[in-house]
Amino acid sequence: MSEEGDVPRSIVIVGASLAGATAAGVLRAEGYDGSLALIGAEDEAPYERPPLSKEFLRGELDFEDALVRPASWYAEHDVDARFGTRAVQIDVHPREVVLAGGERLSFDRLLVSTGGRNRRLEVPGSGLPGVFDLRYHRDAQQIRDAATEGARVVCVGMGFIGAEVAASLRTIGCDVTVVEIFETTLYRILGPEIGRVLEGIHRDHGVTMHFSDSVERFEGDGRLERVVTDSGKEIDADVAVIGVGTEPAVEIMAGTGLDQDGGIPVGPGLQTAVPGVFAVGDVARHDHPVFGPIRVEHYDNAIKMGEHAAHAMLGSSEIFDDPHWFWSDQFDSKIEMAGYAPTWDRMVVRGSQEERSFCAFLLDDGGVIRSTVSLDWKRDVRRSFGLIKAQVAPDPKALADPDVDLRTLVPEGPEEEKA
Amino acid sequence: MAEFVTVGDSAEVPEGEAKAFDVSGAEIAVTRIEGQVYAFSDICTHRHCNLANGGEIDGFEIECECHGSVFDIRTGEVRNPPATEPLETFEAREVDGQIQVGV
Image 1: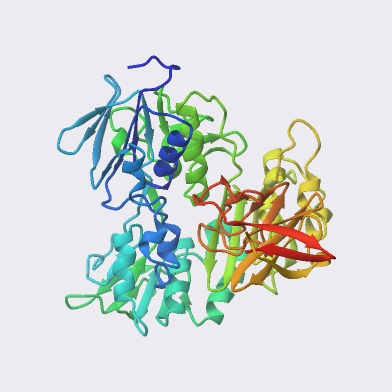
Image 2 (image 1 turned 90 degrees about the vertical axis):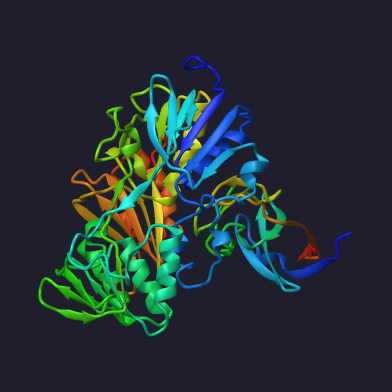
């Protein structure tokens, strides 16, 4: 076993996810030729999850086209790929991963990319056939099989997953009703103003929405027949899809002190408190140099953290300061968001919310731009990356003017970033 | 030897911008960097988004607006994932104020 700081000879990645597979690819591309194991509980080779609520759910994409890399890539690159294998424990002394069944894999460097799991909705009838949630390929396949044209679907929760599932199933001709606990769609992430714009898009496409309400129970004789809400509504349903948030899958770290409810804590460079042990993606609570300790569930972050951790395991000590970016497709509309703003003081808009084409800048009480969100508005979210990283307070008039290139608002100097 | 097909006027592709052309049924993007025209497949190898419409050009790189894949315009190489497969590139030239692409 190598000393810390030496070139590693054995790397284990627990979590055959987008982040884990990306790290494996970067390790091999960078010339790392030591042993490399990739452990995943799912039977499939690593795949991208965003299509599961969109193109795949609508029947427009074959699953094979969602694979991060062709299934043959792993053997071709001497990756000891253990798909359908659960890792159950990490031992720090000696440095070993314990697999279900008892096999032990030793490591110099360990990457944990186990992702998250869906929160359960613990109400009567949630185990009835016809009640689903969506995380895995098999979930999407089951929903796709059940939610055929004309099916009555209830989406429980209207965060990004719920909103995308509602849009996708409405698009293929299902009769879609939403039950959401907050007052509008995507309320917690985007706030009421932008949430209502998206609510309008769903309404115009014929989605029925019940806000400030939640599911009291699912009913049916042997399978789902109706959804009963707290306010007493009874909604006939063939299919229900629950999307009420996720939690990080940290239990592999039991005994290390790193199995925290908010995610595995990692420093600015993605290393945990245990030298040589890294965590990335949805499972990691990252001490971000701009946003502070945060855990996000973004596709792009999984890729970027996977890349970064691969370099870190090979000796790089750079910090991870990506400004975060994600998108959502709902009907013909595309939402993009960058940065991180759990709350904000002021919103400046370029474009038009009425016309459903705009870019909004979320500013803190000092006018510093914390996050950018757009709806059917090209380029500006990605062009705001430099501003978000620079933590500056641009002139609101310049932000509101569509003719001002956001990249020109980043102050010159050592903090200047390529947009 | 590539057969060159005229796709449009030189004025249709200003410096630093990209435009897609239908070349015998293939969607091909043409861009102009430092005065020189370059041609490449307009279809991102990741999820098949169109690159010219909405893609961001920065130096010799184009970034797909859908999911952020970045390609080298000259070689088609992937500079940033999620794409893992390179873009097809084509010869491009200008003759008498017209852009021609070799297919």
